[in-house]
Amino acid sequence: MPPSGLAILIGAGPTSGAGIARVLASPAHGNLAVALLARNKDNLTSLCESLRQTSGGGLLHAFPCDTKPSNLQQTFADIGAHPDFAGLKLRVAVFHVKHSLKKPYLQTAPDEFERNVAEYTTGAFAFGQESLKMMYAQNGGETTLSQDPAKKGTIIFTGTLGALRTNAEFNAYGAGRSAVRMIAQGLGKEHSAKGVHVVHTIANGGIKDETGENNKNISTGKMMSAESVGKVYLWLANLEPDLWVDELDLRPAQEKW
Figure 1 (cartoon, one colour):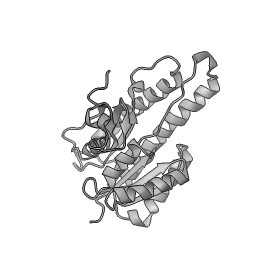
Figure 2 (cartoon, helix red, strand yellow):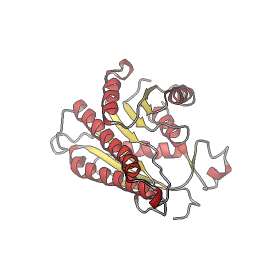
Figure 3 (cartoon, helix red, strand yellow):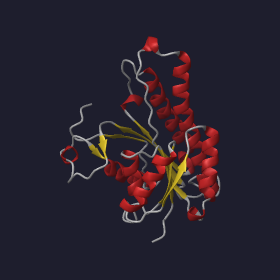
């Protein structure tokens, strides 16, 4: 069965990123061709090869890339030109990049703070921008839903509880996470009426890429399954314009908040 569309995921790692990509690519679930982006070429290539097997024959390709705007622009162009993705519209784009800097306030140099926050937030902004450009280019431009009721795509930014409140020694982390939440809100408010669904998720709790049957922490609600996160993301991508979720908390049953 040929893929029904295209998904782009940046921040493809061995746990939650792998689970999301597997569900999106699986012919039994999302049946989407998936472009996987991450910094480390060797790790990304290995992950991509593994996911082709565990997704049941899904179409996945690796595109080594960091969050620098110029590199994202080139990578999106490469994805658009890839022969295996020809004719496929971008249905869902996921910003799933890790962000962390735990350091005492007085030991964090201002330029270190600036570099850490800028790398994460500017990367999220640029990723959203490139995703938006591709969706509009593939769907007749910036028409409103009143002009054309068809949904153009979904952009998901994965966040954490740090987007809502921070803690001691997590100044840069909290600043970056909360900034990306605001980017998602601003993007959604500006482009929702044009058929682009924008979501900010808050993943609060441990995530493991194993099935509940094989891991007691998952089956008893102590941890989230990476594939369960993927199924939620696929559900978000399939929502129609009459009801969209703009922000969603994700946590296992036994997680305290």
